[in-house]
Length: 73
Image (tube, rainbow, N blue to C red; front, side):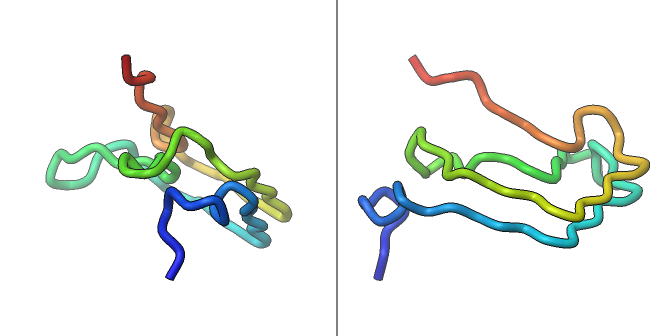
């Protein structure tokens, strides 16, 4: 089992091909905040390299694509 903060996670990368984000809002019908991409709050500060190919983004509200928290003190 590999834990999220082990050395193996620091050599990881993600390849995403053929992703389509369409009609994505920054708030759910119940009023909760939502974003397509957000960091895992229990992960390390390191984010592996992500490669996106053949990606289509259409009618995505501002603020709904990516959320980054402020750095902890």
